[in-house]
Amino acid sequence: MKKAISLLLSAALALGMLAGCGQTPSSAPQSGSAAAPGSETATEPVTIKIWHDGDEAIMQTIADTVNSQLSGDNITVTFEKKTGLSDQLKLYGSDAANGPDMYFYAHDSLGTFVAMDILASLSEVAGADVLADALPMTVEAGQIGGEQYFLPVYFETLVFLYNKALWQGDIPTTTEDLYAYMQANTDTAAGTYAVVNQHSTAYNVSPFINGFGGYILNEEGQPGLNDPKTIEGVEYNKKFAALQADGDYNTVTTLFNEGKAAAIIGGPWLVSGIRDAGIDFGVASLSDMTLPNGNPLAPYAGVQGVGVLKTGADAHPEAIGKVLAALASPEVGVALAKSSGCAPANSKAYEDPEVAADELIVAIQKTAETAQPMPNIPEMGVLWGPAESFLVAVNKSGEDVATAAETAQQAALQAIADMQ
Image 1 (spheres, rainbow, N blue to C red):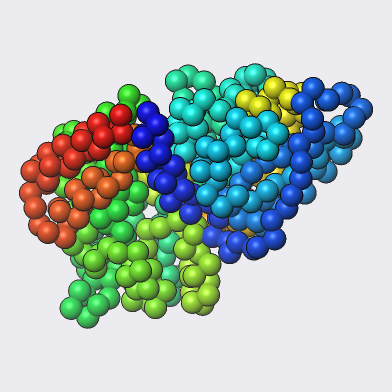
Image 2 (cartoon, helix red, strand yellow):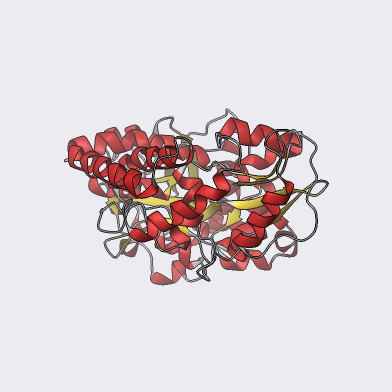
């Protein structure tokens, strides 16, 4: 298990890059210190320290909003940036004197931290009502073995981004109509495309795999790369891939930003570059596109939120319960949506008129209806490689889908075995 945790720490760190709602991080970390264990009273000030490895502007927005709600309780939340957060928690997650009370990070690292036995269940410090207004998909992202270890704050999914000056007509509501549009409006010889996507990246092909009922990894930690439904999804994606250039990140983003592709399947992290390119873009939810089997596209979602360290729960249970309630409030979601373009986990935040008018945020909210949270168990960290090799073999090397699936499945099983 120690080897498994070590492997997953690096994977969790790599996936933490999708944590900024498309914003550019600043470089002014905050600092603070936790109150001494056992010192919490109704009147004495308490400081709750939260470690993160994300966007400083986002953390500042959260801190400002939460602290304004907690001022009457003499509770102050401070965020401290820790580069390589997974490694830092491995070292200090059980250190009451030098570690944090809570952490803020992506949900897919949760299984690693639970395996390290450093997290408290939210039920130890907060009531079930703290999650009452959260979108169901974001709640699911924070569960391990039936326990809730993670409170969601905001999330990201893939969406359909299109150039209003290039796209002709309405956005298709079926993938077959989308494919017909691509056939009619793609000229590979001229280097112009209707739609581009990272067609050989597992995260970007997840809408097809999940939509067909396949899976990369199930809740029991078993890979499904050779599952018949996974094969069906990859086979179906293959014809789209043939009309989407080489599928590499730099290629597809450059094609779209230079006006050589009318649309791109991507996340909110692309938006700053699109705006810098001066493109007037529109957004549609992938949930509004139906596959031939009648199911909508179902992309993976990445959820950002907080977990509670056991040391923090032991030292400040009442204060942490109040912090969790503040973090779960619609006010935090509204503030993040307005300042950083983040899609809130709190459903009531979308009732704010300004949030409801944001096309990108609303498209992400809509996609949450069919999106699936990325698996949060440790085995997922070693599955990205075999899954991507599978897609590359099919889409770039022309291998038979079923044959490539068997090869990838064996590689996945070996990778999981090597974790033990």
